[in-house]
Amino acid sequence: MRSLAGSRALDRPLIRTMASARRQAAETIPSTPIRVLRTVDAVRKWRKPQYLDHRIVGLVPTMGALHEGHLSLIRAAARETHHVVVSIYVNPAQFGIKEDLASYPVTWETDCKILRELDRELADDGGNLGRISAVFAPTTSEMYPSGFPGQEVDSKGSFVVMTPISDVLEGGTRPTFFRGVATICMKLFNIVQPEKVYFGQKDVQQTVLIRKMVKDFMLPTEVIVGPTSREPDGLALSSRNVYLGERRRKVAPVLNRALQAAEAQYLNGAVDRESILKAANAVAVDTLNEQMTLAPEEGVKYEIDYISLADPSTMEELTEVDPKNGGIMSGAVKMLPVESPQPGEDLGHSGGPSVRLIDNIVLQPST
Ligand code: PAF
Image (cartoon, rainbow, N blue to C red; front, side, top):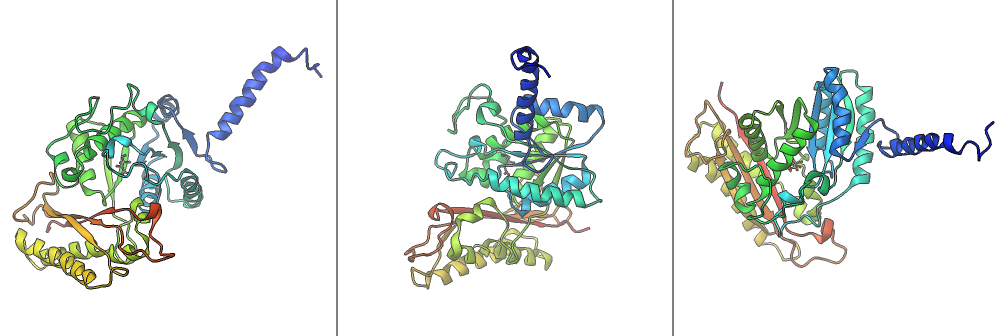
């Protein structure tokens, strides 16, 4: 056995090995083989052999606060690709200066637990091509190497700007939102170089934007859009639902009901904008009127931001649906903070601020 003093030089690499083993251990989600990659360099090092081995990589971009909607995208990615990379990064550039960045739920521990459970499920399912191989969880300085350009409309920096799609609907009230989404997704696609990327139908305008970005910038990736996951009462799953609290949660499915009423018109043969939108607006307005008749400690108030009937490939408003192409019914409502909160009332995460909910239904083309 070597003496401690005599082995000092030799031990150095050993110490380094132990340190890197510790780092290695710290760089996986505990009790899983899922690597946690925090730098662009680490992703590139991990990615290169997969490329040489012709392994297909699927990317599921997220901002964390994982819910069933994300999990269904990860399951789809595991069925179709050898290695699933989940990115978790709350991108400040897609929040406006007055938006909810500061209170956006950051739930790293819970997300890891959810991914650990999902990994077990994926391992037990023989029908999968792959599993979750890595989580990419970078810092803002890693994602914006020249410095974060800021959240202002006139911020100077390197952005992917796509017009006019970024200016309408969600972009109408959130002028920097799609610039932020397109820019971060371009970065993520360049870093991970996935053969397939997975997005949820719930953010329909985002999916149209990403498809267009992939097409217009010739990105070598395939965009897969997974169906919207819903609560049993129709409310689309969203990380923002945690802000609602019990009272507003009960009323929140109103948007889905409104869109369904519009879809029913279309399925009954209506193609003109007026008939289709009238049905949706009636549900939204009647529900609000009902709420207004309730006592302040019971009622819920919301503002309808928009209810839209748009072209499925441009998101431009339609005056008439061409049944060969179909259309997108989408909407956004802002659920206002409850009036007269009652002692002990569940107001939701962060004391129940205003919550902007979005949803959509695809009016399917007739075959
Ligand atoms: O849909 C989201 O969660 C985000 O917009 C995305 C695609 C992860 C980009 O930050």
